Length: 382
Image 1 (cartoon, helix red, strand yellow):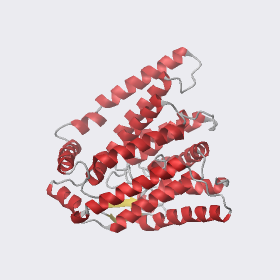
Image 2 (tube, rainbow, N blue to C red; image 1 turned 45 degrees about the vertical axis):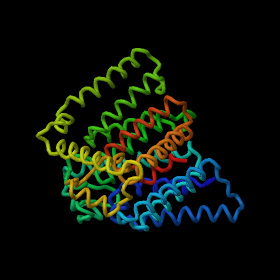
Image 3 (cartoon, rainbow, N blue to C red; image 1 turned 90 degrees about the horizontal axis):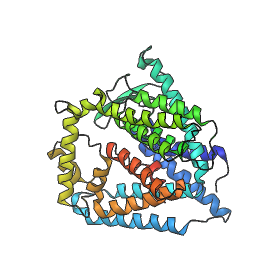
């Protein structure tokens, strides 16, 4: 086990920034992934020298099975234009996350993650507030450049996304919809803190919910409402007065209904809205792509996937679940999410219903953003 708090904070921060931040994931993706792998190897080497290498047999079996299945998927889809470097990249990241997970206890991980996210949120709120006062180009270490198909404006400590301007808060990530996933994950850690490892939770809730509001993310609002509603009904949140409990339940239900019926949400489901049309087209075309090769997929970032998306005018498919099925097929998809469920159950130390609810929340996140293969989410596989 890793004992140094500073090292644990470093590793968890590394997992976060390699999971969707503009500076570390998009601009310097190769460098930060190498840093992740080297860090994991150093931990492994240190344990070997100390003769303290103890891996959970079930966890290492899961890792080896996933690597084997993904390797088989690459071999089967060779004719579709597969780059073996991508296979090495995925498997190396999975192995690195596995090594780090074996060295950090779940409760320590939760506490460290929540504290790091607290600071990320505070910094984002400051930058979000200042963005309405001073030009964003005046921020220290500001950059504006094309990364992939979009032009991003960013620093290493905050970003302004790809065209959202200063109206919404994406934190360090490529868009607010990604940021809300990591905020809601922190809220889950607060609620499912069975050992009360995190003190002064009310201050964390205040910062996280305040930051979540500034993202103006429809999915984020709905997920937060569902989490608070579930936590209140199942007594995960300690409420001394039943009247207050009833208020929280009613407030959560009304909050979810309000956002579903508000312009923020209704605009996205308006047929005249570009976002609605694009999402609907992406969903329909993605399902058609799955039908062509439902069992084995068409390969991870294969030439065929790119070509099919171009033919079908899929520019930015944000549904991570469908992307995963398109690439790897239903067999690996079902095994992956079975492992994810079991990993969640073990990590959060919860029973069937709670684990199922957390999995549902994470799957909603995955259906709104392509996060499935990012390192922080792989952490729950083992």
